Amino acid sequence: MKRLVSILCILLITPMLLLAGGQQEAGESAEGGAELSYWHLWGGSRTELVEQLIERFKSQNPGYEFEVTFTPPNELQRKVVMAAGTSALPDVVQLHSSWMPDVNAEDTLVDLTPYLEKEGIDLDDILLSAEAKRSHYKDGIYSLPNVTAGGMGLFFYNKDLMVKAGLDPIKDAPKNWAEFTDVSKTIVNELNDGDELEVIAWDPYQMAGQPATVYFSFGAGHPTISKDGIESLMDSPGVMNTAKKFDDYIEEVYGKYGGYRAILEWNSKVAGTDTGAAQVQAFIKEAQTFYVSGSWTIGQINKGNPDMDFSILPVPGFNGQHGGISKHGWSYSISQSAKNKDAAWEFLKFITISEEGNGWFCKQQKRPCPIEAVNDDEVYQEMGRMWENLVKGMSMDVFPEAPAIHQDVVKPWLRDIPARRISGENIEEIMKDIDNKYQDYLDDLNE
Image (cartoon, rainbow, N blue to C red; front, side, top):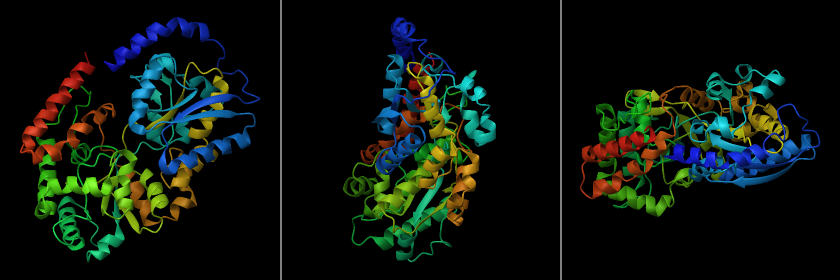
């Protein structure tokens, strides 16, 4: 349906595009700078980094001015798809590389191939292999990567809280699900007085990045969607097993405090608005011991609680540790409606494949960079064991070839599981209902 709306919008504004087009083609001069509009999603601790990134570019490219717009990640897709359908995209736009079909990339975004060829740039020589591959769409290159396409491939844990619970933060760091459950029980029992939760071990239904039901299922070899993206597998035996394991985890770890009800009350009291990037706040406040997320979280923790003693491991999955790199991730593109495409290209190049630009941006957060050479920098090596585990966690491909954006659809349904369990529904009924809803969505999408 979204694709149909986008196509209809594009058909309506085609005459305007024809009148506005042809103002500049690849190869025209970008000397003297330009005024560029630029959308990004880097809020929180990254807002200041974006401002500094722009200033770094302007110091090397006098004459550029920017109209910068921040949009939260959970709002950006709708905004970008709508703008693509009405010729309202900015000159340079941040988007997810899986959105190419939704924005009709061939009609709304600039194919960067001529620019790359003119400058003799081979992405395979610059980028990590997976990052170079995801830059291609159909017969063109419509985006370049901003950060590595990391899903929830990392297992963060608060070492001090483990010590307070009488555990060794190295020897007792869990490597599989059984160890994780046992350690979680110890932490919850030792760090809470009375019958009310103040500190938790982990909440399976936090929705940062990929939903944990999706992530753990893929890690165990049980996809939640078919490879071609047309069949829901949410009630398949493997995925159902994940949901049951989470159900058992809630009872084993939090049962005496009230189970699902206790977790919802804790979220309301401690985590507050626990969606998107805000979810890390409970971990930063040291009210949560384990947090499954991506490499971006390192910068958030260092900014929010620089004194926290934390470390990283791959996720302690059902069959052993696993991590993940999703097929798609955050990238930047140039809109076909940009008035100065050459100037937009200079900026795009700086924030994606330039070591002085995007390399700097990634190093400031100590997160892996799509630019392969940057990851050899000493700023990463100084992280020691944490960097080794980070690379290990980010290099295990556990995601499907189906478009990653489909996974966002199931988030609200999975998020409702605690409330539905409290109301008396069993986990099998809930998962079958989610499967039906997901299949209806996929059917409509693929009509």
